[in-house]
Length: 489
Image 1 (cartoon, rainbow, N blue to C red):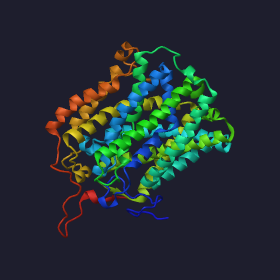
Image 2: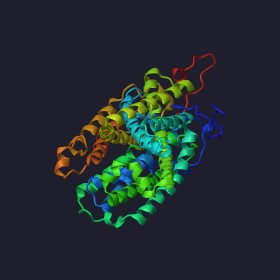
Image 3: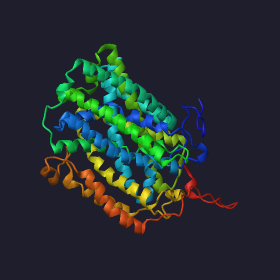
Image 4: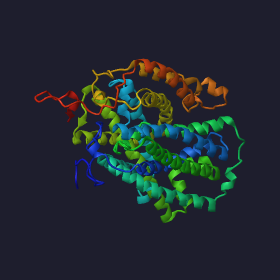
């Protein structure tokens, strides 16, 4: 097997790039791969569950489907705009936060992003542990969970090319597998009874929109990681539409299926045994096992993103203080393995003590912190910096982006706090949300307030180079190497 070779075409080539810019000579791939990756990532069991949860909020089935579609479109626009940054900058998503928050200040959204990655990784380990146990007939939950953790680690360590290949596989098997489940659902269950069970209410409709919008917006810290290898000439429009359509269509199919299953079976029955219910609908036996394989493949696609993104965030925080730009393969592998092992161990403990549902609610609450970050990042990139970034300065805390940018940090804090009265979540419901019958408008408030505070302030204070700077001029012979070129490990 080839390893550590820039530009190699082998799918099993171990990636050598981390948080540094991908050189133009190593750019590759087709923009259509963004569609297959995000279609496969979204067509998965957790999105199905999210659709079912819309019914638990009290939404009528058709209203839930329409609300979820609106939310997917709104959130999909946001995440696709982040994806379009990848080919232009050639950087992972979260390191670009140093432009707005400062080289060290970017640790604030990064730490919260790591917690999100851990939470989603834990839920994936639990669900796919159940599926693998059903496939192999294992009785002890630990075996399926550990096996899935190992699978995730292997894909994340190999990196970018293999992640995209798994995404393409997931898009095909997910469409076939969940399509078969839908056919069996319509053939064996009274799906029509899912509609009209409750009256339409604006509160539940708005909650369905928020549910899907939040789902899409949580991908914002991920997306540029998987478009940064595309050739720099790739247009913003092509990257946007390929990512947007893949993510929105995949999520909408899965969530609609979740709405129909919850309406036909009842939410309690489905949510009590999510994996087993899909196998039962499929008809049991060998067909059910094949559906469990589909669940594992599609969750492997998204879980690899969690491990890969978690590694990127951890490394971005560390290097903010060390000024390193590159890491050795040993350090890279060690961080990925450590992240996955930690998530698997916590998932095992949570599964035993029943803590997982509480932690999932905590993760959902964390989503409120990503909307202000997303607004700040997008406003800066598209309206203020206008794609002009000094990339070498991102690795120098003493440079023009400074260690901490208090304009962005303060705007971010205001954007988070402004949501509190409007929140309607398991952990807390604000007074405005209560007055609106439980409708959660916090994400809309976050967008408006953060935009209004950050935009005029940043226009007066933000450092903006006159062009995109990808490298410093060559040093004269005998000059010492810059600190940003050192490798860690």
